[in-house]
Amino acid sequence: MIKKWIKFNRVLSLFLALVVVVLVNVIALTNPVRIDLSSQQFYRLSERTIGLLKNLDQPVKVFVFFHKDDQLHDDVENLLEEFQHYSRNIEVEWIDPSRDRSRAKMLAKRYNFITSNVVVFDINGKSIIRKVADIADFKREKNRKNPVYSAFKGEQAFFSAIQELLQGKRPKAYFLVGHGEHRLKEFGHTGYSRIGLSMLNDNIELKELMLTNKEKIPSDAGVLIIAGPRKSLHVAEVEMIEEYLKRSGRVMVMINALNKTGLEPMLRRWGVKVRNDIVVDPENTLKGSDVYIKSYYEHPITDDLAGVVTRFYLPRSIEPVNEETANKKDKLEMVSKLAVTSKKSWSEMQFDRSSTVSVKFNPNTPDKMGPCCLAIAVEHGAPQKVLDVQIQPSRMVVVGDADFVCNNFLSGGNQDFYMSALNWLLDREELMVVAPKPLEEVKLNIDQKQLGRLFILNVVVIPLIAVVGGLLIWIRRRK
Image 1 (cartoon, helix red, strand yellow):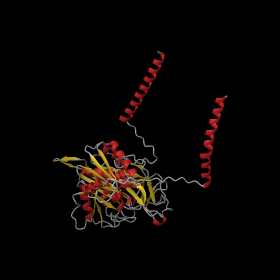
Image 2 (cartoon, one colour):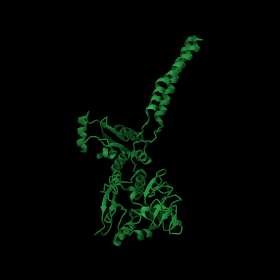
Image 3 (cartoon, helix red, strand yellow):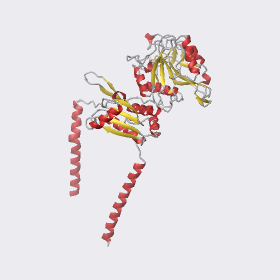
């Protein structure tokens, strides 16, 4: 009888243990906890991407045409798994062009593409194709025949594809030309081709605008961008820009130091003063001519920039005309500082480009001690409804540098600041372009002596410890 009870207790214990294991698994499946312990948090999605995915109310079909051995295959797969985790409406189908040729051929004909290694997004029959160049950056290195995979842009590319399909209509950004501005079609160091590509990936249509023989800014302009004019604008052109602003227009003005643009009087009327100076910050510089910004004022543009460093090059200071009302919330008029330098910085009025490093603050000159403001956001008017038409406020962002997003200087922090300002101007606060995630190359540099020590430790010492420990235990048990 006792043996039966013992046997019954064992069976009951095993059953209860099985029940506990099942319950733990059910709880884990229904309440998953996901923690990214990687140093770069490579596949962690931004809050804006998560918000978009959670609010998806229609199915998104994703067709991935990648070979299994492609270097982007695993990164694309892991990223799409993250997308599926946050939305059940993401339906992913993988097609290996070399194995499933009939399926690949049928879909290639439907979506009109001829190359492999593409990702197709489809919502209700409307589709967008993302190619390898949209998903990753490659760079050429010496002694290497093929370009090297350097940065992953998957989240940026996939987010913008879904957003474009959902929005339908793309906002237009007009770049002013004709005064020596940075150009979108320039691929050299001073061009804007890279930031232009980021804007295209963020579902923004790009156009260039010359105001000669124009009566006004086009009515379909979502934003007008003035990128570092080297020559002064004509009075009639400035009047057109101001008239556009008054009609709920959106303008981004980026002015390089030591350049007169003709926009200064207009900016002053809108509450912004542009100083004819160079900002020097010895506490936050690498070469003397650049300034690192780590501090931001509270604003929708800068809400997501905590911990992000923006780097400006020979910037000039941009100040509110009325310091007392700056950053005070007013429904009708608001002039907000965005980015400021350290207390040890100053506004240098007597500047020589050849003496960037040796320049010093002189209290006996018009030089002004910091902190200095390098960027300002302006908002005039409050949203109002007239005859069932929503009238939006006028918005403007003024930055004391236009070089910070040119091809030579564009980096993750600079791109984030620019795109955040642009999305605010376009009333797209819910969007954020995600900067490319560079691949971190981890190298273990050891010499022959260190390699010999590692060999002795792993092949001799550790096994010997295990053998000696086993012998000691065996001897002790024999006694």
